[in-house]
Length: 628
Image (cartoon, rainbow, N blue to C red; front, side):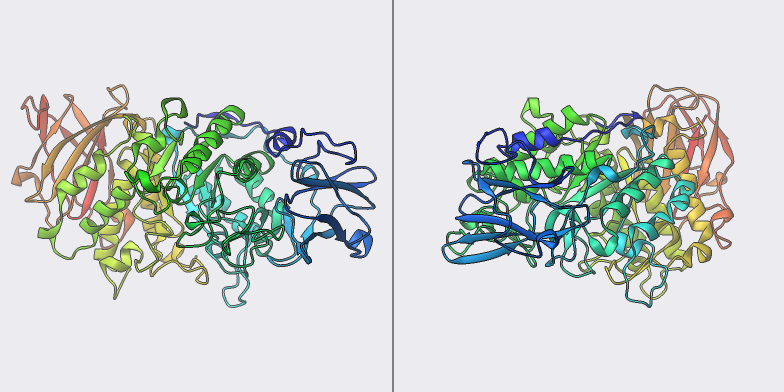
C-alpha cells in the first residue's frame, strides 16, 4: 500500500532490455543491449524492434529522406532487430519498414513516446531532456488519500465552442483549485494515443505514446510536475485488457497471424476477443514484458504515483468472471502478479489499483499469498447500494440495510483496499447520469438534488475506504459524462456553497484540524440502523480518544428530528461531542434549514451497545459528523 514520504524516480532502461531479451548478444548487430525503440546517441540513434516473423526490417524517416533501404536493421536471433542510423535528432519522424512474404508494412514504433497522429509517423523523443522539479514531492499515504478523477479532454476546456479538446496545460491551470479543494491525488483517465481527438481514452492504439491532442509527453510531464508542486499525486488509468480496436499499428505487426487474428501481440484464438477490442497474448513472454514494462514506464519516466488497471477481470478471465476456471487466463493472472511484484520492488511507495468490479478479495491479496498484489480496488458494490438510496423519490424505498452493507464492506481486513464513489466516468455514463440529475431530472440544482447528492458525498468521504469524486461533482455538474461535453466551470460560482461543503468534508477526511483522526483509521462499528425512520450511524476510530473517535449520523428521510422528539443515539465515550460537520448548515446553501446541534452531551444511558448515549436533533436528508 502507498505510504507517505518523498518520491524519487529512476529509469529502467536495463530492466526493459532484459525483459525483452536484449541480453542476447549478436555480433552483427550494433547495440543488442539497447532498449526497444529509438535510443539517441551522440551521432544519431539506435533503433530496436521485436518482429520475430519478419524477413527484413529497416527504419526510414526524416533523417534518411524516408529511404527504406538506407538503414537496414540486423536480426539478433531472438526475434528482435536492431541497427544504428546517423544524423537522428530529437523530434525526427520515423517508421519501421517490415517485409514478410511479399508484404511491405510501414509500422509505428510500439514503444514510441510520440506520434504525429494515431496513424501517423513515430517521433524520436528523448525522455531525459525534461527538467523535473519534483524530486522532493511529499504525498499523502493511503489512509489520507482523497482521489479526484478527471478526463484531460474535458476537465478544463477554456473555449468550449472551438471544438479543440482540453490539454494537459489547460488542465494544469486548475491545479491550484484542486489544492484548495483539498484533494491530494488526481486519477487521470487514459492518455495513451487513441484514434481521433475525442475519446474517453479506453481505446489505446499505442500504449507508450502520449495522446498528441492533449499536448504529448512533455505536456504530461509539466502537468505531473505542477501537481507535485502542490503535493498532489497523479495516478493514471492504463488499459491492458484490450487494445484498439481502430488505428492499431500493432495488429498483425510483422505480417504474421493465424485464424485472421491480430498476430504477435494478440491471442490467435477465442481468447483474443473482448467486448472492446483484441486481447493481448499474455502468454507470450515478449507481450507480457511489453505490458509490465509499460506500467513501469509510466511510473518512472513520468513520475507517476500510481496506476489504475482498467477491467482486470478481462485480463484474468475470457468473460470477466469469478469462479469460472474453464475460462480463466492463467497467463493474465501471472501478468498481474509479476507486474505488481515488480512495481513493489522498484517503486514501493506507489498505489496500484484494480478496476475489477467483481468483489474478488484475491485481487488485493499479496502476490506472496497467491493474490494479484493490488493495493486497492474499485468497489462497485458501494455505488450500487448507495446510489439507489439517494436517487429514489420515496423515503420508504430507501434501504438502510443496503447502505449498512456498503459502509461495512472491506477486503482482507483492510479498509483501504477499496475505492469508494457515487460518481465515476462509468457511473455517470453508459445510460446513467450524475447523481443530481437522477434525483431531479428536471432541475438538477433543486433543493432535493442538492440535499441528497451531498448526503451521498458525505457518506463517501466518511465511510472506511479511499474516497473518490469525479470532475465537477463538487459543484453539481449534471447530465452524463461525454468526451465532447467539457466541465462547466461557471457552476463553481453558481454552487460555490456546495463546493465549500465538499472542501469541509475533505478537510475532515484528511484530519486537517486534528479532530477526526478516526476517519483515517481501520476500526468501524455500525451501531445504529433504523430502516423504519431511515437513519444510520457508525463509529470510526484509529486508536480512540479525543480527536480520534468519530460518530457519523446520516438521516436519509425528509424528516426533522427535534430534541424533544427524543432521538437517542449511542456514543462510545462520556462528555461533550462537538458537531464538526452538518450538511444542513446554511453556509452550504441559503435554502438549507440550518438545523441541528452545535454539540451534544452524553448521559450514562447505555444505547446501541454503547456505554453512553445522547439525544440528538437531526436535520432532513443530512449528515452530522461529531468528535470530542
